[in-house]
Length: 159
Image 1 (cartoon, rainbow, N blue to C red):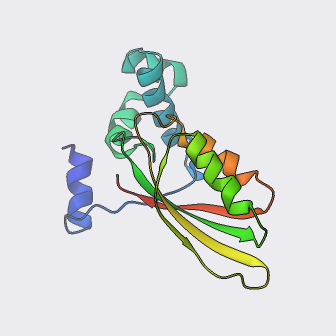
Image 2 (cartoon, rainbow, N blue to C red; image 1 turned 90 degrees about the vertical axis):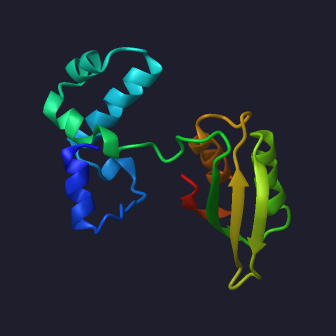
Image 3 (tube, one colour; image 1 turned 90 degrees about the horizontal axis):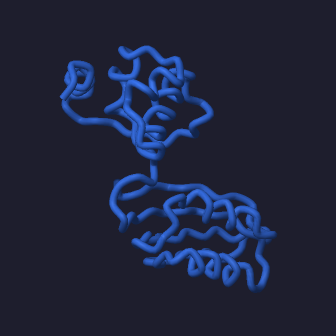
């Protein structure tokens, strides 16, 4: 464990705290650390080369590299929950389920509330498999553009 990690554990009584944040609000340095990690993984280059390409300092990279992990990285059987606000329209849930099935994901639970003012609240627990696309964001983007999906949020995962 790095010195910084040990310091952070002391601050939080040994309990690590995790947050889901949109990448766009992260500082340029943190985004560069992410870029280096992605280059190392996808382009099979050295960390040194990735650091050089991004213009990030080595000390900044090594300070933060152990604290950054993509939300959907980890086990192939990732479980995560999504919450949606939908227009109360016949067939809308079927369209959403079709996208999920097409992307080879398992549905663990579906909770749909009765419509209030023409809006239905829906929560689905999904399990990715080895056949699930590596980029789950693509699946969620497909759902988001379905006519009648007003809001879509990721509530959490088992990482």
